[in-house]
Length: 381
Image (cartoon, rainbow, N blue to C red; front, side, top):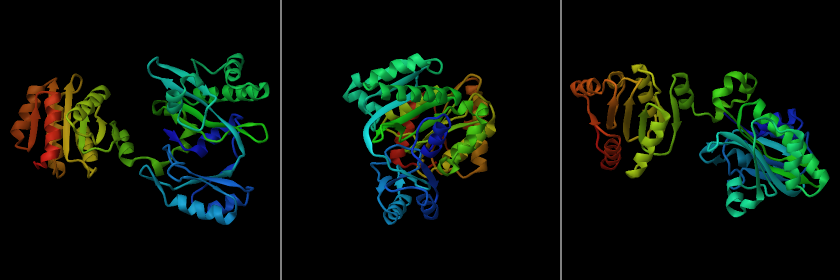
């Protein structure tokens, strides 16, 4: 679950991390009320769960009420990476002397959280890593930082002892946020040195591990349905894993690893996956029906590729669910099916006897190649 900047800052502030004074606004009237409580200049920041807001015009400085309202109106009219802006953060603008970076994320190569800090901030950490790798300081951690660890890290970044001690306190608190809330990411970028000599979190990003939400009930109030994909939420309720992508080949698989391999093979043959949809290990035909329903809501889908490697999942149950889906809804795109594993012969026989316009394949690569070719020929079932 991705938290927006305002909610991430609210959590940071509850731990004593210094943040800008600001107010969330959902319309121009709320922007006006926020301005009543702030001194100029102010900054108006689009609240969307994607990066690149500044480059897209979603972050604006304003020196007067009229200018602030004009810029807020412009930001509310934006779409940033396809996401309409429905909320803005109106905050006190700070006089920035220098920017730094600090964040904690999961390094999947080592299956451990890594604390990252740098003398350079305000840009993507990946950009810093490419341009100046020596500017990045890393420390792998299994628990919140201890005081001496935070100070060791901060004194590598800050020459001024006063700033180093300020930073150490922030490092400690950020590490507690990360572990207390089952985060996948807790990031401050930039951590800014302001004109009054203090360090403040001028931007904030938190991503919570969805698998830990059952023990993070207090964070559910930050879930923002305005920015969540309703199909993904419906799929989750049905026991499916679904992520919408930008291509035109709908993918139904069993297992996340197989899903990734399927998308790779589709790309290899020159195609573009429209989604990641994992029906899991269940042999429930109803899941197949629901999966087809969700996939076909995407008007960009020209072909559906069903790629099943049956172990716990039975291929005959997948075939039964697909047949029921054809009877349940109108399917106007080609469907390619690869069934391998438990009861694969029974599943293929069921599909062949059904008389439905389904193309079968004995291998993943051949099935993917066929699906890609059908997107180009425009064939209909």
